[in-house]
Image (tube, rainbow, N blue to C red):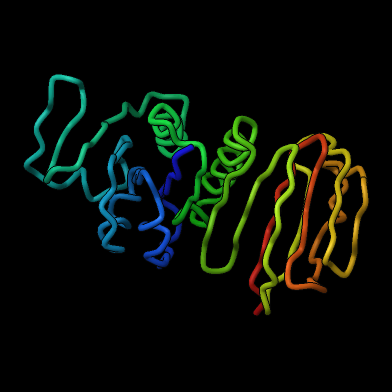
Length: 220
């Protein structure tokens, strides 16, 4: 599966260039286009209704026969504001059509909470189909997994929290942490997985049946 870097329109994150260089496909969503230019990342596609991007104020765009717009060699897909999906979700669905299945989001945290929560649900949408999706910011690293395990390298000055993102997740295990789990049941309305700590170079988190959200938080 292709690796996709999604640049969304939340708070700006000065992401390392390695994320861009390792991506097979880069998509900027609405205001994410402004952030891509600020980062010096050239997206393969820009998508959105452009209600919050400076792109709406730029000239020189020409409508093409396939319903997209091309400007300065970048493919631009203009969406109607009358739509069900967010710009970021629309971008994810487009990237999936291009063969992408491993997603990393940047500039997708904070901002408006409703937009941030929508992006979390978008991570869940991806995990439901492919098993893993991540969102990176200056103070958080968020990963959603379904029916799988991952290893998380030790991060000094960061905490590790694990919650169920569905009604009930079964067979949850955590190892290499101060508070460990072995085949536990986690429920969405019982958030007892807050602020764990590493005791090894890597923590292992797994779930046999269900969807987990794993949040690394930078401690002040």
